[in-house]
Image (cartoon, rainbow, N blue to C red; front, side, top):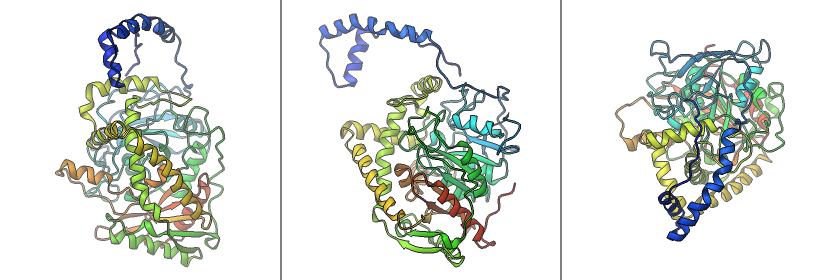
Length: 517
C-alpha cells in the first residue's frame, strides 16, 4: 500500500465547528469566521512539509522476495501469513538461522497485515530496527508469522485467517497473540521467531506450544518499526526451541537505537549467551504464592509447575515460597492501562504522539485510511476495548488510567523488594493449558477465552520486568504443554535466562519437550 501526499486543505466552517465540539467547545459564528480566515495561513507551512522527503531509517540488504501466502498443504498449522526469503550477511552469530517475524514487524518489501483484514496489501518500505540487526547477524528471514487480529487476544484463535493450531496437538490452539511464532518454532518451520508481548503474547503461546519465549525488560529491545498497542507496555522478544537460542537472538537485537521513545538514552546490555549456565546451588528461586490457584487455574497446571520446581530444588537450587499480595492486583492495573492506552494508540493511527524518534508515516496513512473504512472488521475483543477505553477516558476523565500508572510504580516496587531476596520469581506462565479448537463458540465465550490466561503474565508488562516461559512438562488429561515463568529484576535479563537454562538442563528428561529442528 503506497503512501500518498495528503494535500492539506483548510477545514470548512462546518468542520471547524464539528472538530471544536469534539473538544466540548461551542464556537460562535464570529469565532468560526475568524478561524476560517486564520487557518489557511497556519497551514501554509504544511505545504512545505509535503515537499520535504520523509526521514526514514536506511534499508540494507535490498534483495527482497515479496513471498507468497502458503496454502493449507504447505502450512497446516496456519502459522504463516507470508513465506519469503530475505538473506542477511554472509556470516555472524545467526548465520544459518531461519527466522520468522510476527506480522506486526516491518520487513521492507513484504506485506504486513497485523493478522487483520484492515491492513491487507500494506507493504512497508522500512525495516524494523531488529530486522536490520538480525540480517546484520547473518539470519535469513523466511516468513511473516500469523498473529491474533491486531494482537488483542491471548488464545490463538482470532486471527483474520482462523485459528493457529498447536504444534503439539493440532486439535488445540497455539496461544496468542504471537500464535504463528510459537507454532512455526514448535513445528520446526523456523529456527527462532520474534514475538510481541503486551499482556503475555510471547509467553502465553510459548507455554501452550511447548517452546521457550522471553519477554525482555521494557525498553531493552527497540520497538522501532513494529506496530504496537501502547508505548508503556509494548515489548518484542525472541521465541525458540531452547533457552540458548533465545539468548543468542537477544544478544543480537538488544540495545538502544536512538529512535524508540520507549527507550532511555542508555540501555544496558550484555552477552546473554555467554552468561548461560550455572550451578543450581548458586540460584535462589522465590515461588510466588499468588501465582497459583487463580479462578481460571487448572490443578494439573499448578501441580506440574510445582513438581518441576522440586526437580530444580533436588538439583541444588534454593527454592522458597514468596508472597506478594499485590500481584493479584496486577491484572486490573494492566487492564486500566491497556484499555485507555490502546484506544489512544488507535486514535493516533497505530503510531501515536508524544515521543521522539521514528514515526512510521506510511503505517499511519494505511491504518488511518483502513480504520475509517473498515472498523467493523476489528476483532471483537478490540471493539470492546475501544468502546470501554473511550468511555472510561471521557466519562472519568482519564482518572483510572492515571491511577493505574501510579499503582504500577507501586507494584514494581513490590516485585523489586522480593527480588532483592531471590534471583528470580517463579510461577505458572498461564493458569491453564491450551484451549481446544472450537469454531462454534459465542462472541462472549470468544472474549473470555481470549483474556482468561493473563493473570500472571500481564502484571509484568506494566512493570517492565523481564520474564521467560520455559517448558515444565505436560498436564493431564490431554498431555498439553505447561510453562514455568521466571521473572527477574529490570535489565537483569541475563539472570532470568541463566536460571531458565539451568532449569532446562536439570528438568527430568521424561518431562522435557524437545522441539524438532
